[in-house]
Image (cartoon, rainbow, N blue to C red; front, top):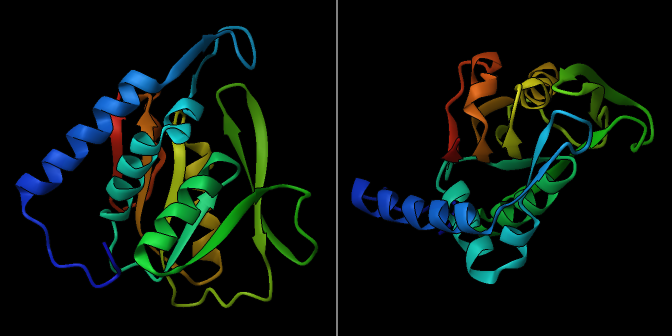
Length: 190
């Protein structure tokens, strides 16, 4: 797939999504009470370590916004996804970092998550984001704070979120309701 990919049939999209979903469901490692008691953690490391699983996920996510001119991956597993999708689409990639990992100046957004609070940052200079068409990626959508904060950062920098995508959505936490008006795709919803 490239940035100039032809429009695919619904059948091809459905087949690719079904294959990726089967691999994600089979390979995801679940851990209860991590990182804090009461949280059930979805570890996608085995999916990314499997060549077929990783390729299926990357292809599925890349199809979400073939016209994006920048891919943004949210710290930290989103970095892996972002790099793979950007290489597939022939675009650049930008890492959305946890607070304190980038030199100033930065744009920063604080947010709540299911087990505390955090903040994300992107460069405040050095990368012209005004007018860029961004595909925003993360591994898991839980309460939605992380993805929403990342989208706010790009909007503040003058970019447009053309689509957001995740590998796994924990729909019972209703994180989708916190997202903006951009399309949001998840390969697997539980």
